[in-house]
Image (cartoon, rainbow, N blue to C red; front, side):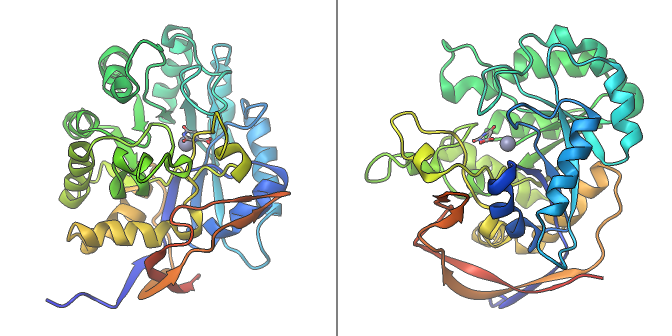
Length: 351
Ligand code: DOR
Ligand code: ZN
């Protein structure tokens, strides 16, 4: 069978996206709105988005930053802290646009210092989440600096995630941006109500990409890129079509100066070509026919949202990613900057 030259999909959702705030927000959100119908917006601003009221105000700023005519729905997640009151869960549920709470183990990643220091501190909130059916979105890495950075996800499964799932047997959990064979096996073998997002970078690259010809700060994200065996396990899992796996880019913009730095920030910006990059990844593993369900069905179904109406059409038409994009007073270097991507968005039909 010859390779298709166009690909028409139901309009997809990005269930893990960082858009920041202010000028940075205005610079990046149009890229997502041009591709996705909805996105789950991460709450790791400074200060973090901790309450339903803060999330609703942030959501208004996102809507105000959209280009004229855009049809894009921000869905929100609240930042869980040691001090989150259990009553915030009910306020979140009542808002109608907050899908859950994000667990950042304190110190695990960018802007996580206000995160949870010990999972026992939030058991009351988890209890309420379990009762309401809202989800817990998890950054799944332990933070102990003695643990090898490549082992932190697997260690988190054993020491935090598995015990939480046992203690709260009806809690709905999204293991965000999984990167390892261990995480794939855990999610696919877990009880009902457990799912995971998978980023384009963890499908397309292994850790060699961090050191290709020199150190590559624009390939640095957290969880860090893993081994080829891990990448292959992720690819095999999405090729298998499990409804537990869905699209979440973790597109995380940082100014070039913050990335090309003696202590560069974690985060890969992929919103400029997110769907196109997934198309490349799925094609490389012979699974293009699986892309639509991964991008437009599984996540919506997990979150009990209607699947989107409308379609997006991709064409095989290589284009070169600009060396940088404007980003407030600075610029961002996007994934594949100065290189080619094989697919392009040709049309979006919004009902
Ligand atoms: O690489 C990352 N960047 N991982 C995260 O968990 C956070 C994100 C960010 O906000 O920059
Ligand atoms: Zn993230």
